[in-house]
Length: 286
Image (cartoon, rainbow, N blue to C red):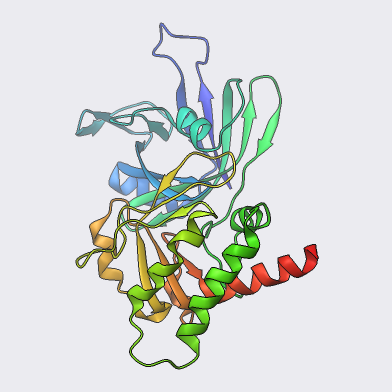
């Protein structure tokens, strides 16, 4: 686990707060030194976003788009074209209370050309700390991997019985051997899923099936994520990921039959598993 340390909190004359990268893995440091700079993707409660932030090596300076030698002496996170600093973005996505954040602990993943930072804890200048919901697959619900975020959302749904009836009917139609049922039939679940905070966009004939989809759970802000619809997760084509930056997708399927589909940027929402969980939840309430 590494961390981002804020420095110069009180010194606006010397350029304001800076965010130093500390404790990163040796493999990450080696890649950063070789490249000089690296795009930063940020983990949110729902998954990754393109933050607009850039990680810069300690011996480089990024001036606009130009990278040149420098003597800063610290690997760091620069704002560049981002609308907010790493502190501001984390505060927004995790709906954090007021108070200056001086340190962010994170797990890290090198994903192709980007450094993915997954925040795990924030430290405030007051001395308070707050652990963040850390999950590599925050929108995943399968028999073996069930996001706590999604479980909380399901358990808090006032229309759980109706949602279960709607989803269960579709799952049965797809698993009872009825002929000629097409994958777009899964769109019948859109009303029930919307009660769980999952809004499916229009079904398109090219690229992602439902590109303009979004998720909103609990107190967190809305998160946009394309949804690909498949009868089985093994039908997912990774080529579709080239259509988003950063790469991101949730696979909505009846049956999850290929564990390799899930990566740090691909979640799987299995209707059969979700329906089973809803049934057990409703049974426990009765």
